[in-house]
Length: 192
Image 1 (cartoon, rainbow, N blue to C red):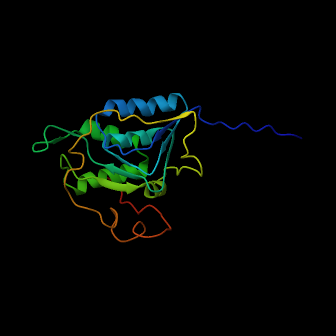
Image 2 (cartoon, rainbow, N blue to C red):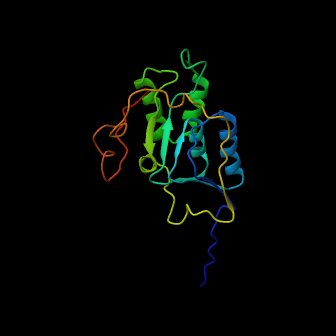
């Protein structure tokens, strides 16, 4: 008996190949939704993706490079001196993340006092993989004729890199993420 195997591959891909520090939320959320409608892959190279750029992680076919770096903070409005946390947008961001990252995101906001603008929680692609995100496969990061670089969707928010605590050994301190594997998500307390 012969079996027919059909492989479903995305028709094209959005390759994030240069650092993207975020900007206006709308274009990023729209781009992730469009990638899903078109069954496109969203592939993050060894780049930094902060703030609104992290919304692209919501795409169904997103994958991350182990060395990519992602920066998360609570959305806010106003001026850097008088910023106000935006609870509605914070919930929208959180809902776009997988459950383990969502918990970490909310914990980070709580642990930094809900500052607006607040410090970035920095995670590598390898750390995101331990939180349920897919690592890009071998050769998957190689651009092909059907792939195209991601456009920067809006003006860079110079305050996305607001001063705050640094995480020299990762956001979890010494432990599973501070050295070579195995990489497992940290235990989480219940509730937020």
